[in-house]
Image 1 (cartoon, one colour):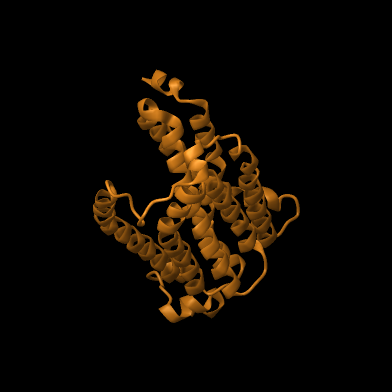
Image 2 (tube, helix red, strand yellow):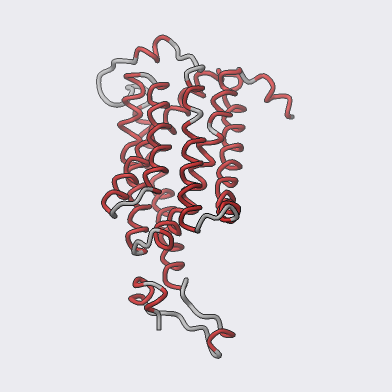
Length: 274
């Protein structure tokens, strides 16, 4: 069964392997960002939730226009630009600044992630060829989920960094910078993937969508829309639940039933909880 993966062209394999570290960065960011902004940076939990919302909104909104730009000006260029923007945004989150700056960095991360996603997918489809396209995307998806999970576990490195004398906040900032630099280091290797002459020069067509497949794309997008809305509501619900109950006292700590702070006290911080 696994012999099918051996015939994947080397440029397609290179794209798959180059996506490992960026996927680790994304997994790390989405797992740790809400905690980092609220508990380490000291932002209001509502601001942390808004930041994640801006990331998701900019990702969705930017996906369509960056895909058009990738077709017109080159997918490899857009892939490089997306990786650079997404990597630098991690450093931006770790820098001191106001909520406004963090929201701008979140928008940059969403745009970079969108540019990377649409470009790597189209390049992989081109380089894998018709025979190995399904196998290549299967390997790409599998390794993407695995590397994203590894990014979530990378948060445990904070304890390791604290062993070198760093505080919790300094260890978090150092980890953000390290993950960003590792993701950024894959950028020069992207230039080893050659684009077809037609793709590199860009395509010129009338309208925003191809004539033959435009209708199919619209139908597929509308079918997928409820799924994405449900996902956003699910993540929002989990975040709201955590923010409301993160300061609750267990029965053995309070001497009675679990004490859940009010919504206003949970937004003010642990020191204001009664």
